[in-house]
Image (cartoon, rainbow, N blue to C red; front, side, top):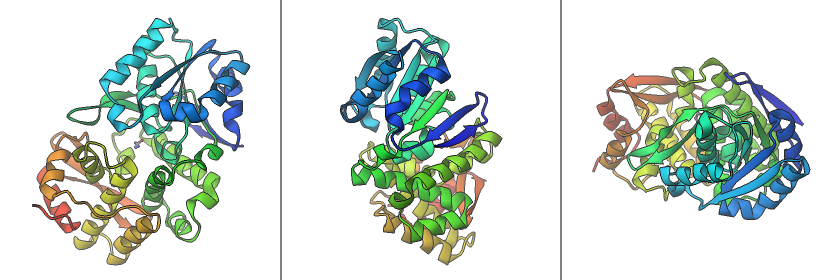
Length: 354
Ligand code: GLY
């Protein structure tokens, strides 16, 4: 069993072990001391893993109610959030009870936001069932829902009490969902470790799954420890997300998060090479690795469409855009610029304006 301690405002552990889903109840009960649990997930994930998770929670003495919602980023709305809140209230759950978010990034964000705000904060366990959630969204306490105006515009920071990751669950993911997580994994390599980036070239993620999850979580731990509230270094984790979120929003979330981030990383890497911030070889290595994992590196949207979508993004703060750009494999920096400069970056990155 791998345990990674996250030293945030609420300190907690991420446990990684095959078969952990069947032992989830013990850990949830021991860490939270809750009497009751709300097991929250989308219909697909609950049909696959809900019975095992519920049995494990009940075996540990937790009275468990199951709250399901339709899946997909389209469902990460205030309406679904309201339905989860009403579910908790109708069953008279208390703040000492635990919300168990079983699923991918949408469930983690939505469930986390419900836990953060129900009676001003109840106990929270994250059980990621996608690679993307395991390496990124289940750790670090970002919670929220989308608004019609953009992604994650309504939310808060709320660290979980524990994160339980069972890599076995990830081996049965549909290929396109697994691939989505690979984009975030490649992001960690490009951000912080040349050696890790090259290991992804030589050994597929699925052949080193536990190691990959542990390395990504450890990198995220270091960033969150330094900048929990995303005021400085944590912005590096937005590599590929400025253009990525614009692609997602513009497609009304029919382009998945991982594919959108992949496009975003490719655009920004090409742009950085064109502007002399990184070498052409660096940009080529990024695009090559993304493609090796079957990830897209081009978009059919015009620069104008993406620019307009990007203006609603949270990454514009104080009227400035904070764009994460690669300098080399394993080293990136945050560049602060006028939002209009994004047009130059899109064009340099190979996205035609019209
Ligand atoms: N997913 C980016 C972050 O947690 O900051």
